[in-house]
Length: 420
Image (cartoon, rainbow, N blue to C red; front, top):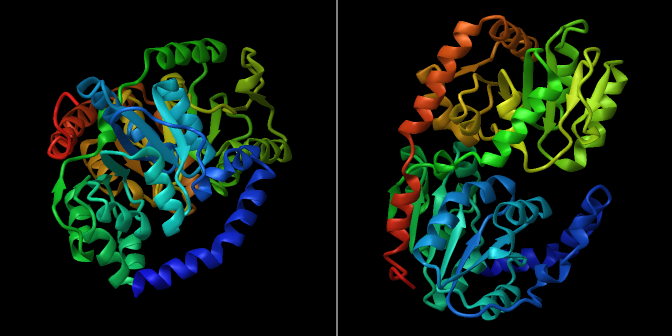
């Protein structure tokens, strides 16, 4: 009964879902491309055995990178199909994997659209990244005896409380999974409490992501454009954070403030925020050297975050200043960049806690938090010895936590024979 009521709600919300696509397409027209796939209509076909990976958006797609590489090496005869819910996730898969991975949208969670998706691609195994749980999809896989694993799974306290409000539906959905690979012990505990079976703590795949050589070379090029000025990078910033940082940034500061918004549809919005404050700005897309008079460099490009980190002296990880839960702080740690984070870290709770304990990151919580953040950044930019110590700690912290890919692959291969 719980799933029937859920299905009726999904069907009732379909008109709203398509209105939402139209709304998002005002700033990001890609939302209207391939829209038929969201109803289960696909023109693409696959040949041979298929491993299907669902990665909802950019973060999940990037997290899947080491796993995709390992699967392609261990199972060269299998076609990998990667499903997404956002255009930026799909674009990230294109940038990371080219045409070696078939990219599609996962349909809305109606029984007929899910059945059409599974009929079209006939996967031998399904892997869902992080926290995407779709009751009809899980039920359909279970009926078909298709093993479906939740990998790199995380569940914050806030998300666990939301699932607890629909406890029966959550329990039915989680019990339909063949297994769960949790990032951390706290994630495993919450998932078990909601009814997940076979939960193993295997670590975070994001620690195994290797910075691409081309990105590091691009970071060197960025640095040459900037010159010898100190660089404070605000990476993957979310709505509301840029305004706070810009208001706290000293107007005559020699250091360069680099802002890279999380979502490309917000590039123009952030440019307007900078202009409204009278700060001289240049854009990464201009391909020009950064003038000495420029106060803000806007990172208006996608898929180059490692390059921005490589060019920075100190990095703030966005999504943490306001209550968005923090973006990926592992990447700057692995590159040896001193990391600053704000008070909101529920998406990376354990990694943030351990990075701070290891001396790789500083968490800022004093009010007003943006003023405290800028003060910490400027203090670090003026202290090379402290930056070097944090850099060493960051690299050591990232290295200690590697290995989740191999452990996750061992779990997967309980369900798919080696060499397939």
